[in-house]
Image 1 (cartoon, rainbow, N blue to C red):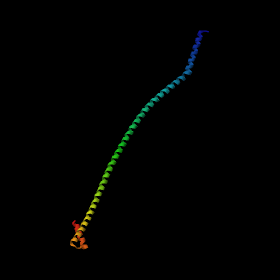
Image 2: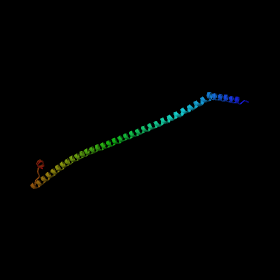
Image 3: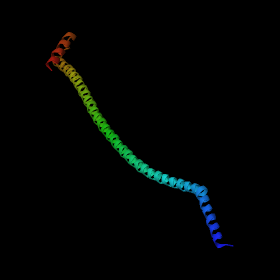
Image 4: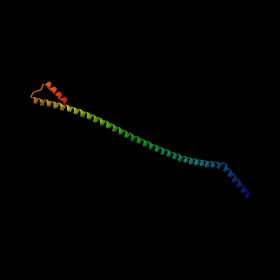
Amino acid sequence: MNINLTMLMQAVGFGLFIWFTAKFIWPPLTRAVETRQKQIADGLAAGEQGRQNLASAEKRIADMIAEARAKAGEIVATGEKFRSETMDQAKVEARAEGDRIIAAAKAEIQQELARAKEQLRNQVADLAVAGASRILKREVSAKDHAELLAAIRSEL
């Protein structure tokens, strides 16, 4: 055999192999590699987007928590204000009620005092008439008795 022909045939076979590989095998492999690169790039972009979304969500959550704390503080302050207003109002009402009770008690005391004075006047007048009857040793008529009691009452 001829070495030149063998080399030539090997070169032609190798060329056909390269042509076949370039035509039928290489394009699908290239597409598979490009597809895989695209998937990896998309995954990395999605991961970065997820990190940004997480940071944004954490910021929104922190803002919501701060807002909720502020609202809670406002509610507590409003409750404290309402409590103090209610207590002040209750104190005012209690003072007014106490003053009313004291005024009613004073009026009742004045009435009782007037009744007691009137009873005392009547008793003093009766005693005076009884004393006068004994001194005079006679009974005073009912008409005279009534006039005498009225005169004594008016003097007292």
